[in-house]
Length: 194
Image (cartoon, rainbow, N blue to C red):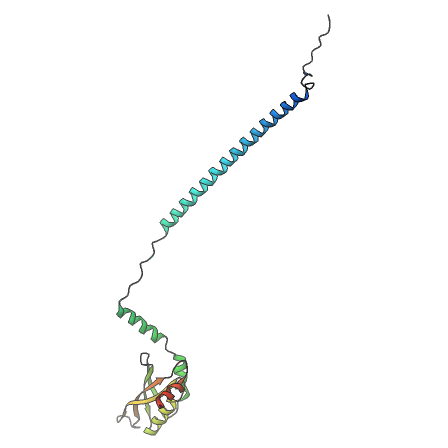
């Protein structure tokens, strides 16, 4: 018996002509390109799905945020009388207390007892009640107060002698006009002198 020549490798494949081998390589490259294109298409579709899911999640989150956010309050409507009351309160809060108190401290004397002061922001003045030992002390105090900042002038509105007190002090009510806040008290006295 003769030995059998069994060769499982077909050597003829490698011995094919060049054109046939090139065709086989092109077919293999085409298959690889189709597989790569399919993989890219699948990845693009996967990204598109994720993008759509993200957009839907953002829309849902916005809707929940809008649902949780209270509606804006309607504009506040105030009656004219309420507006005037609020403006009056703000004007009282804007009273220049440090300047007023400094002005009264600058003209304080032993002959005058300041009992009460009350600002009138609408008329830009301060009303006050004080007691003096005599008329001349009262006039000197008002002259000094009228020329002291932040005041433009001061005048007596009422006076009476307290007969019940053994010292018989002169109680007087006065008004001290506030000077122009921009130009100071000298411009108000100059206007009064004209």
